Image 1 (cartoon, one colour):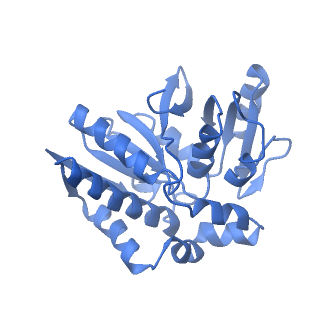
Image 2 (cartoon, rainbow, N blue to C red; image 1 turned 30 degrees about the vertical axis):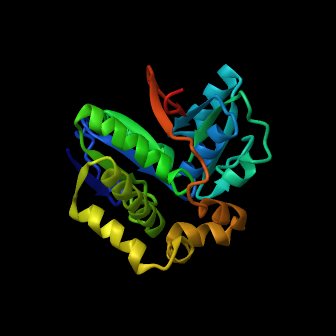
Image 3 (cartoon, helix red, strand yellow; image 1 turned 120 degrees about the horizontal axis):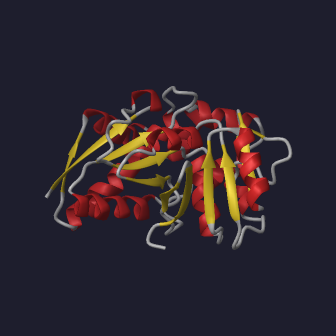
Length: 250
């Protein structure tokens, strides 16, 4: 079987009409990593919202925890920042969380019309691409990696992460007898994993990584670099106009 794999290197390149593809949304610094960590630590559901006020209203109506940032800074009055490191010490077990971020949650909203949507980062790379391959194979569909970018622009960290996921996907595809047909953008993302010695080097050069370090986010920076530490694959569900995530298969 042949599966086509495309990569959009920033949300400005994404075509919402691709509603028959299996999407992996990547905002490695930090929304993707935060969502994976929330579910990994026992959060029941993560609702992703594009606006701050909508997030506050939903959380108040349903007794949810709030997590969010704008331009990297925690939103006033929210329980948590968009921070996977902070999630580790916060009591999220069995709770629902409303999450609002500068880039990732907005991109999720844009891509919501695809066939299935997963959240990917370095933390869950192997688990995520495995779920995407199984789903694409069953649906006979293509896979699209959607890099969130930064305010609609390309950023190196998301593209490097996409390349890392593609390398893991290629290994799993060979093992399962699947041939991947990579687009030029996918090949370019994969080449970044060769151009940089490791994720730390790529992240340090990225606008997102530099911004995170500038605002004192070294703990998150280091946390987001970890690879294949989580089996969690956040899977999108739709509830009227709301988007929420739980672990795939749960």
